[in-house]
Length: 115
Length: 109
Picture 1 (tube, rainbow over the protein chains, first blue to last red):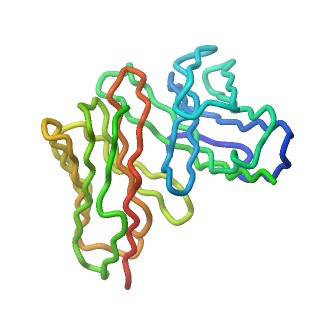
Picture 2: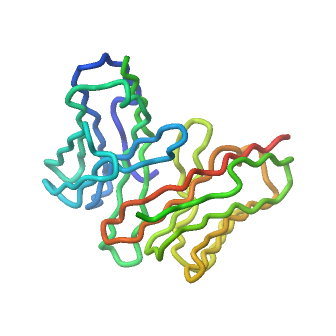
Picture 3: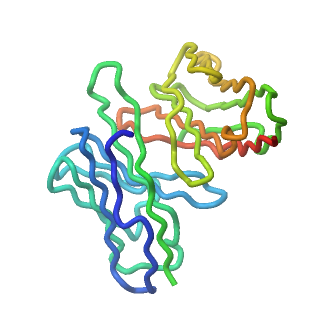
């Protein structure tokens, strides 16, 4: 295992409520990512971080915000959840500035259902 | 952005059979990874292979970067090989992976 945990692992919430998902790593990797996986779309990047307080948007960032106040934690927030955000969310880590080490490792995923 | 296509989309094998999964991509890449998503949803790293050939037990992979494709070989398949196999690539400094649609493999006993 690459030392990545996600919490919660499962969550059911109602439309319009705020939701925060947490990704925690023990590997001291600089880069962290949030992806979502939906049937027929594979995995798509939501946001990523390239250092503490340094974040950028991915392919499907609308409706999501992120924060990274320390190396080991990357938070994904849905300010007002919608049914279209029902998905499985994966966190990933990598250290692309390590020589010959550009590989991404994924957490166990969080299954989110928005009713 | 870069396009990633995997084939076949579905594959059914008898235990012990061999198979080849293909991943085509539309641009040069600096990262290519193969993953196995098991029936419990976990994404397992198989290979990090932007070019060349690697082997790990019954699995091997080859990427021909100049021709923009990668192959994953599974030999003597087992029921535990069932699941979805994803190819993912990155072609820019942001190291953002673009995933293919996956190959769903079922190995029957």
